[in-house]
Image 1 (cartoon, one colour):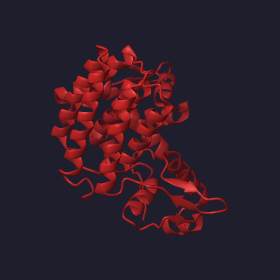
Image 2 (spheres, one colour; image 1 turned 90 degrees about the vertical axis):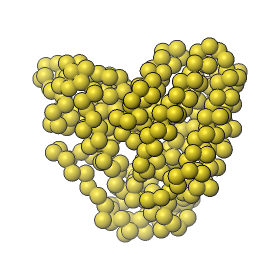
Image 3 (cartoon, one colour; image 1 turned 30 degrees about the horizontal axis):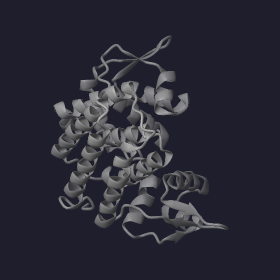
Length: 305
C-alpha cells in the first residue's frame, strides 16, 4: 500500500516539495528571525506558481517557524539555525509516493522493461490521471519512454554498483571537459553563492544539514558549473545523471565525513575558476569525481537497504 503524507494540513506532493525547498533556502541563506519571505520571489526562485508556495507557507506557519501578517505576508519566527527539526521533518516525508513506489519496484527488478498503464493502475491501485502525471515526470527525467501505440518502456537506471560506477566514469569525461570548453563563462555572483554554501558545509553543515539538503547542495554545485559551460549537452547530461542519482542517494544514509571532504574539494575547484585557472579546475574536478567514485562504489555499498 502506498504511503500517505501525514501532516496538520494535507499537502500534495508538489506542495510538500515546495515546502522542503523553502526550508532548504532559508537554511542555505542563513535567514534570521523577522525576515520577510515574499511569495513572488519564492515562486521565481523555486520555479513554480504562487499557489503551491502559498500552501507551503501556510503549512510552515502551522509548524511555528513562520508567522503571517495579513497585510505583508510571511516572516520568520526563528533563525535558520533553529530550523533543524523542521528540516528533519521534511526529510522524512516522501517524495510523491507513487513515483517512489515505481522507482523502487523498478530498481528491485519487480517491473519488466515494458509495461502498460492498465498494469500499473492495477499494481499501484491508482487512477489513470494520477498515473499519467507521474509517468510524465519520469519521462522528463529520462528513465521511461512512451511506446508508439500503447505502453511504456523503461530506460537505463542507476540500479546496480556497476551502473553507479559507469555514471561516475561518464561524469569524469563530461564535467572536466565543460570547464575547458571555449564557451565557458562563470558568473561571479553565482560563484560567491556557491562558495558560501560549500563553506557552510565544511564549517559544520555536514553534521547539521539533512541528507537531502547535502545532496541538493552537491547537485547545485555541479549543475551550476555545467551551466557555465554554455554547452547545452553538458548541462543536460549533468542534470540527467543527478536526477537518476536522486533515486539512489535520497534513500541512503549520508556519509557525513565524505560530504565535508567533497565540499572542501568543491571550494578548491571554485578557487581555480575564480583565478581563471581552468586547466587546474578541470584537473581538480576529474580527481574529485574519481575520489567520489572510489569512495561510493568501492566503499560502502550504496545499494544496501
